[in-house]
Length: 122
Image 1 (cartoon, helix red, strand yellow):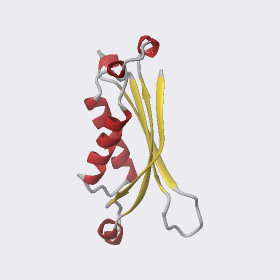
Image 2 (cartoon, helix red, strand yellow):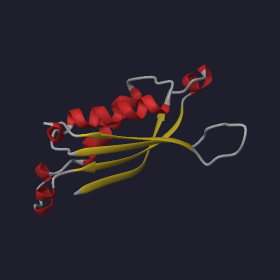
Image 3 (cartoon, one colour):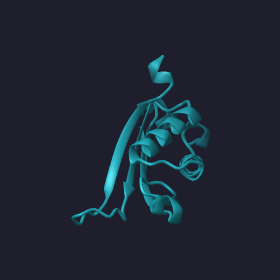
Image 4 (cartoon, helix red, strand yellow):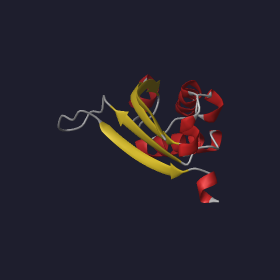
C-alpha cells in the first residue's frame, strides 16, 4: 500500500545564499509512504500512518534546521520519517523549490530521495 501526500507547502530558511536563509522561501514537499499490503485491509488508523503526524515530521525537520542544499533537506526528511514510523517499508520524499532564481526560467528545482524502512532492512 502506498500513501501519497502531495504539495505540502512550508516556508523554510534554507539555501546556499544568506539572503535565502534570512528571508525564507516556499518549499513544496511530496511524500510517498509504503506500508505492508496486509495493513490495507483494515479500517483502523493504528494500521496506517496518520497524515497529520507525517506533516508534523516534515514541519519539524524543516523548521528546526537550516540546510544549504535541497539534497540535505530531502534526505533529513526521509530519514526522520523512517525513524518516526517503524511500520514503513519504504519512503520517498521530493522537495521542490518553486521560487528558484536561475539564469534561465524554470518552474522549480527539485530533489527526490528514497529510503528503506527500518524493518525491511532487517
